[in-house]
Length: 178
Image 1 (cartoon, one colour):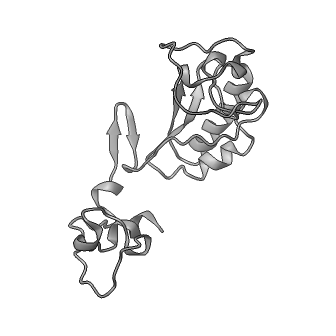
Image 2 (image 1 turned 30 degrees about the vertical axis):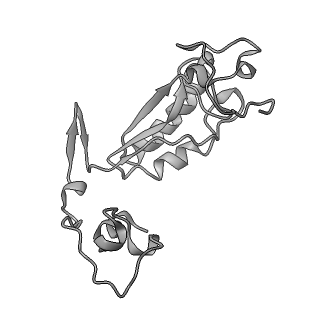
């Protein structure tokens, strides 16, 4: 469902209990109920689609693509060759925040996530940013260190560097399994 359409759809207050979901995405939508329209209808020049200055960066709109871990990195935690296309296709957003990228080998905590600490990783991320900039977009890198969520399998058997020696709950998938 297109973003603009999402904001134009009426929502039944009684059925949605305050949530703003389009009727076709709601299981509780009843077409026989008179809907209450959202007060903010997204016109082409609504606030969401107006420019904004973020520090020294001029954004053409207020849409920000939130970071999502794609788990598509290849050997050496290098972004996949499809990453420039993936991100450049989304360049019309006001700002793109990349998937989390490890700041060091010790920051690795999930399989197939890209880093930003080796020459090969930096060069591959450069092709991503060049593609986004070439499509008229703006992109920030989300830097991360997974800390205690990591696992010794990612570090040659050594314990991960973390602010706490307390192991997190749950399981993590490593290159060697769980």
